[in-house]
Length: 256
Image (cartoon, rainbow, N blue to C red; front, side):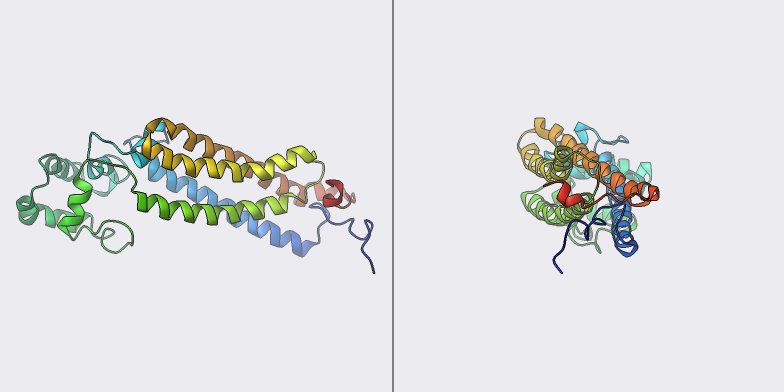
C-alpha cells in the first residue's frame, strides 16, 4: 500500500513509537553525558594551561601557539599537571628546566624524580612524551611552541569525523520535532557543523597568530548552544509534549 500522510501521522517526536523513542533517548542521554565529560576534560587540560581555573583566551593561546616565554614542561607544571607533584618538587623541576635541563642533573637526581611522579602516565599512554627517556624530557623542556603540526593534524581529523557524526544524529533526531519554524530548524541543524569548522580552523590559525584564539571559544560556544537546544527540544517533545495525546502529523512533510 502506498504511504499517505495519514499513515505517517506518527512521524514526529511526540508520536514516535516507544521503541524508537527508547533508541533516540538512549543515544541522546549517552551523547549528553559524553559531551559533559568532554567539557570537563577541556577544563582540566586546556582550561589549566595558564595555571588558572576556567577556560580563557590565554589557555587557548598557550595550548596552540604556545607560551614562548616558558617551556612546555613549566607551563604544564603550573597548569594542568599542577596537582600531580608536590609544590617543592615542581619548583625544583622548573628551576632545573630554566637552567637548561642539564643532563648531569638528570642522571644524578631528576631521573628518579620523574620516575616517582611522572612516568606512571608518561611511559604507558600513547602519543604523550615518554619521561623515562631524557631526550623526550629535553624536548618539552625547550621553550613552549604550543601544539605541533602533527598533533594538530591528528586531533583535527579525529574531531572532524567523530564530532560530525554526533551532530548528524542529534540533528537527525531533532528533524522530527514539531512546532519549530522551518528556518529555525535549519539553522539549529546546520550551526553545529559550521561552528565545528570554525573551531578546528581556529586551532591552526591560533598556531600562527594568537589573536585567532577567540574563534576557538566562539566555535565551542556556538556548537554547544545549538546542540543543547536540539537535545532539550527533542527530549521535551518525546516525553513531555507527547502526554497531550495529540497527533501532530508528519514532521518532515510539514517542512517541505
